[in-house]
Length: 125
Image (cartoon, rainbow, N blue to C red):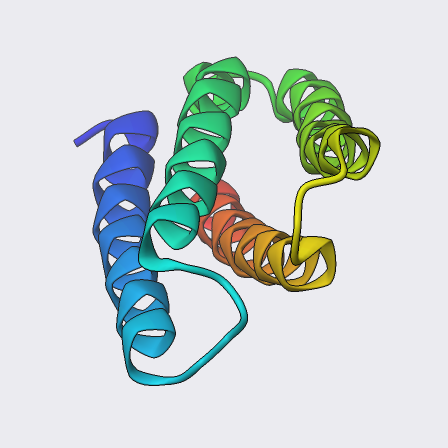
């Protein structure tokens, strides 16, 4: 199996698990956001990571230098998108902005961690 297909398979399974855990935590404990807001955050982060993975994953089977450049571009775009969303919420004066921002950053951090782990493992193999 090609590396990019292995990456997408692993990442999708992990994404589903992380979303399930996040929704379970929001439903069980009072994290300051509603279930709908948690689903919106999770949906935004998943779509962001899947779309941005389309930038880097095709170069997994090719030149490592090309992959490194694409990964830097990918990470930069991924960092700017959640920050832009939080700024947009602040300007829109969305209630519970602190809880929304913390949930967004937590999910982003988890997704970025697992994405980096999977990319590193595939590059080394």
